[in-house]
Length: 382
Image 1 (cartoon, rainbow, N blue to C red):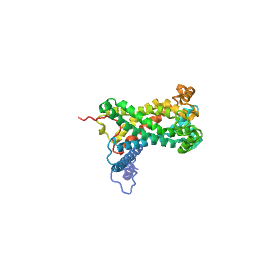
Image 2 (cartoon, rainbow, N blue to C red; image 1 turned 180 degrees about the vertical axis):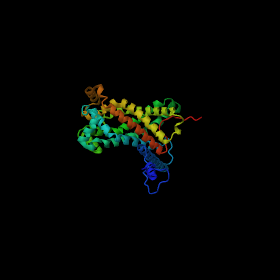
Image 3 (spheres, rainbow, N blue to C red; image 1 turned 60 degrees about the vertical axis):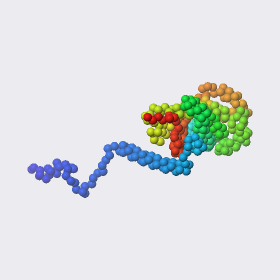
Image 4 (tube, rainbow, N blue to C red; image 1 turned 30 degrees about the vertical axis):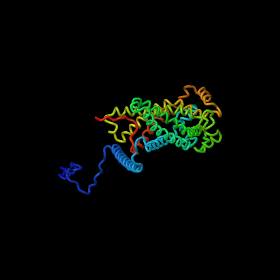
């Protein structure tokens, strides 16, 4: 009547005895209790490996470039050439990258009722003009701002040294902000002469729907053939009819851009422990981006009314109309409030753009074996 001993053992024995199991028993794979965490860790490892490899390739390319150019002495011809090329890369690439934002900004400045929001503008342009329409104006943007960046950054380094020598080292250190303002204004004055023809073509290309100018240099040729040889800024009969308002926009913008950047970077390094030279290249370019982004916000606010006027003049100025008369007519149409159309999108665009410009520019200087921009003039070591 009672169950046998073997039945009792089989019934109550543990399913996974502590003793050794036979080799033919299949084992289930070990399950990770946090699979999402593993994905994050793997991604982080891949990113670290990629960053190390990119850094190594950067160093190899940098050494090759420096071996070909030789040691670059500060304030030498080679130094100014390197800064000029760095400025070309910094401005040409970044302005071209934000062409879709610039397109929306220009169209909303010229006709505030055209789009209700930036997102609506993007979808309408994409639907009506295709993907190519979203990047309308990238050609004159690239050529124009590459030329402007070359003269701006190279000129700034030249004029900063020129004015510093003119007033003496002691006065230059005492009035360094004034030095930054004067040097940047001088550089931008020249840079805008190179930019203006391309800016005129860009604005016409972006604000004419559909665009009647298809390519950059064909556009320049068409404007010259219709309106005369460039040069008459006051008569409005050439590619330079927007030069005065361009100076009015870009010179205050660049003065704020360079002076505030130098000041912000100086404050950042002074607030950090140790000297600027204690921080590696990645940290220094990070400081450059931060200082550039903050400076860009100030730049956008200072220069925005002139930016609106440039767009209006290039799009709506009548043939033969005097500069002052055109500005007066446009201001009567849009009023003071109209001068601030498109400011939010321009703050985002210029902040990001200026931060990236300084990061690219300083990265190129590092690539060529040069020190980054800004920071304390003399590092005191005890």
